[in-house]
Length: 141
Image (cartoon, rainbow, N blue to C red; front, top):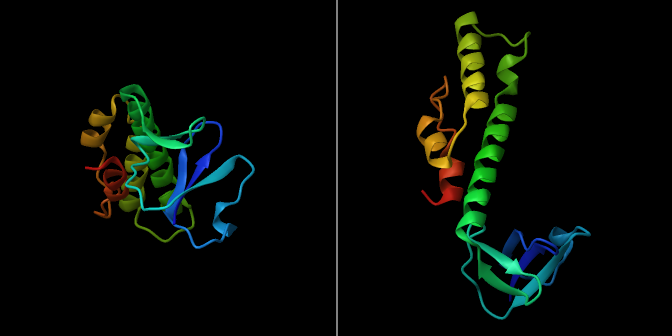
């Protein structure tokens, strides 16, 4: 069986995959599970559950755009959280490197505009790590 864990008011997809009969990973009062006899191909940015019909439906263009915008906002917040440690005052680090991290984090905060613009202007991390790989994966690029 294939299970989709979704928000029971909005139809937003939370988790999906093979269902082994366990409900441990599907906890939450605002969420429910829908089971299918066979595996379903779904895309959390482009699909949601129609909570009235309990079927997978395609989002409208406006809904997709909003989902992509939220992915970008979450990615910026996650990257800021992931780089917090570089700003701790007692972390041993050359002054120039700390300043490079400060500039990078400010550039993240300054990102704005349409998703396509943000994706092309995302700043480069001082350590050269590709901070956008997860975002590109989720957006299907």
